[in-house]
Image 1 (cartoon, rainbow, N blue to C red):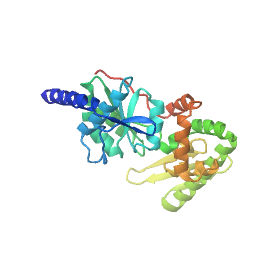
Image 2: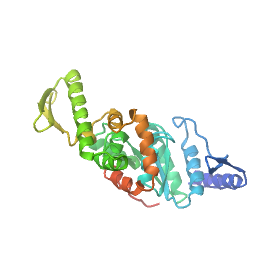
Image 3: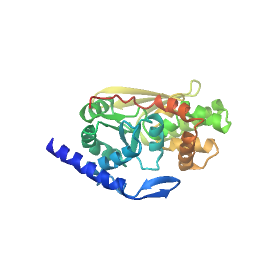
Length: 285
């Protein structure tokens, strides 16, 4: 408790100094030269992150807290989460290990300033049990889909992309699904010791994996309708990009960032993203 009070006092002393320091213009907006500059979040302390969060909160008094996420300040992760959670200051801190390492103390320290602290990571291959344990132990949230690429390439989002680019949605979705199914089938056939059944008529891949140690068979069915949600490879963004006239996933990230910032689509995209990202629950401060 004493340590938190000391930190609280130090912060306000810093803030008084910052308010008297000159600001510079950068990219058309005022940027305070005293803003915390964290080059490498893998070695950053939670106090550095809290300092950054509080400085950003001073510039956005309407914010109610902070969301730590994966990625960098220019990554698509930040753009997506700022769209879905406009009431939070989104701070990308690199990889998922940085989010899990920093969140507990950032969360508890921000509570002293009556601010919420949240963290979110990609689901990747986490099990339901692992997801539950992470949430219960440190308050961490996990996306419903494997990667951020699945989120920005979900059918709900692609409908908006098609509207913006004047593309027929049904045609695009069929082309993307077919290519992903072919990629999945080829990859599995070459790399896994499984029984693989392909039903061309009903457009599904049925995987039967024998687990000898537990003496049982696991059956997993992937359909073309589910593949955009479940395909666990970032190549999905590259495939979508190619089918809408862009070159590679980086071009798609840039396009999506601009689309999110387009006021004509911001609210619509927020609703589309909300289907596949968790709803954050406020807790007692």
